[in-house]
Image (cartoon, rainbow, N blue to C red; front, side, top):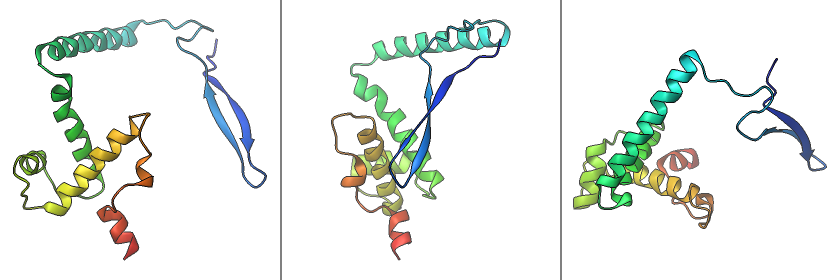
Length: 142
């Protein structure tokens, strides 16, 4: 039996109609989800990895400190996709000393981290309303 994962709903305004995919609730019911073979192994590995992460999280004095490196690394990778040359070491050194050989790239990475933080917080203003002009926007404006 084929699995239907959701439905399309239509909506829009007078000038711009659209179709939106609305997924069904999880876990799937028709047919029920069956974990076997490779899927079962991947699920087991993922659960084990979450267990290791939970243990590591309990070993640090502060969850925010634990997440610090992950948030910066993700912001760095996102910024590098956009063309910055900053490294993780550049970002951490700047945060410790306020000096950098690549100040524009480090600032772009820090801006990316700020945007990511705003996007994941339901109580903040969207970054598009108050974000500083990033290098990409400066280049587009030039």
